[in-house]
Image 1: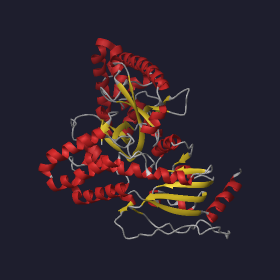
Image 2: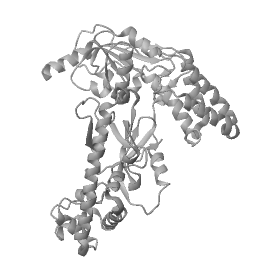
Image 3: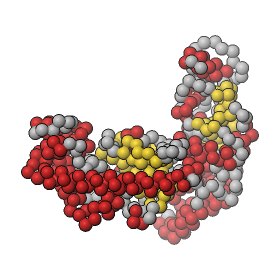
Image 4: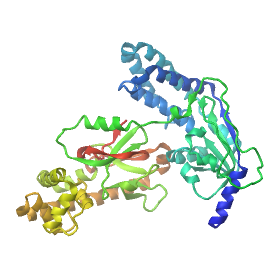
Length: 495
């Protein structure tokens, strides 16, 4: 179909689209969700208190995921008896002394949560199944929910295509679209320029949504088969604003939690903050040359791939070391270096620290100009940042490295430093190749459908080979960069 025909098809869909809103009821889940909101309201600013934050994160995550995908209430991806037991212990001990009334309000919620989890289904799944046809497509609000929802539906015996909102921004239409969750969770274009002839919107009764206004997309008269949009009716029952259910991230709080535990003299780099599945987070260096290992679950031949950090997007799976530190290459390289590791690493830190301090004092552009003046052919602001980075070991050419040594006052020792950096570089290359082989073997033997469904999957290497490496689905990416100590890059954090 050419672009003109595709545009014509989109116009036809928008002109004749029929939308029905279905409000799904589950009395006990309804009671739990409203009760959780009352607890949050009663806590006020204390919701960010270190005591209450993990309790609310767990309960709110259950409420959101059980409303956003047709997962059974007892699905291990959203329910954990171990977490419930831990929360009950916190509320029964410290909670009764610190917050007696609020703890008394929270304990029944945990009990209700466990009771709901004895239900092995989710009415959202029943509502989808009732309306499925061979031409149905399901829409979920986030990329990270796509694979999970597909697995859940496949487990119920229905192979259904699942999309995220970004998938509906192109020039194509479907016959029937089933949208999970309230309209407020989705971009306006899903409704103002609908890509489906029929839309069923499924949401729980306790969600307060917005009105869906008739589309303004159509500018030409087209015969309308049905009333295109149903207005939202608030029936006066106690409800929760749909936006309040969505997971939120306090970016500054995560940054502050890292910065308050560091030595003020540590070197810092620009880093991007990633929120991972399972209430985890990680800072990765934002340098253009920085890369991270990823898993592409759809590539059977090359599932483990390296990708620039700047190209990572939500829904991808990134591999991170989850025991023994943030970088899984360094300990293997140090083992290869043997007894010389401590000495050569000290030399590496020394010249990078001097270059970094010079850049802080004079500015990156000035340092690049100085480097060109003393013989570097490729010194630029981008390259200087790369050379400063902990990810970089040396320059590609000796003349650029010699220029660095000259401007930091180590010109007479340039050749000695260069030879040391070559030793480190060789060790890193050997370590990377070794880890890559180990990972590839484990990933090919792993059940990657489990990774898609759960959002995380651990690959445990032999102790002497670097501990465990875990694949995490990227859920959100911070909109800005942060200055973070190099020692905190790549470390998986609890949020």
